[in-house]
Image (cartoon, rainbow, N blue to C red; front, top):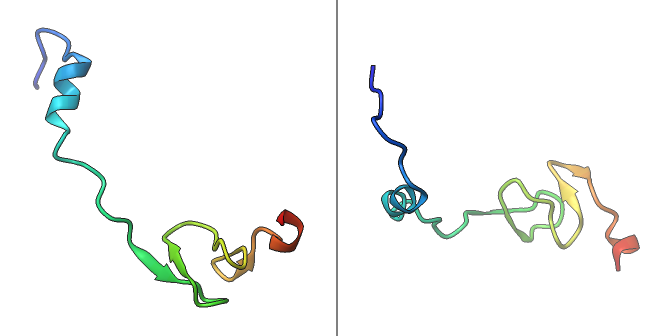
Length: 61
């Protein structure tokens, strides 16, 4: 089993992970209102998530 002789520094770790940058987020359509929504997020237009009301947008505004 691998056993490192010394700790990997934060700088070295971050340099190694530079190619794992976030890509453009994938968008889906809201099942309630049809607006473009980022995956796993509440719809900013109607406040629904997975077919259920998560946030009452009338009270927010």
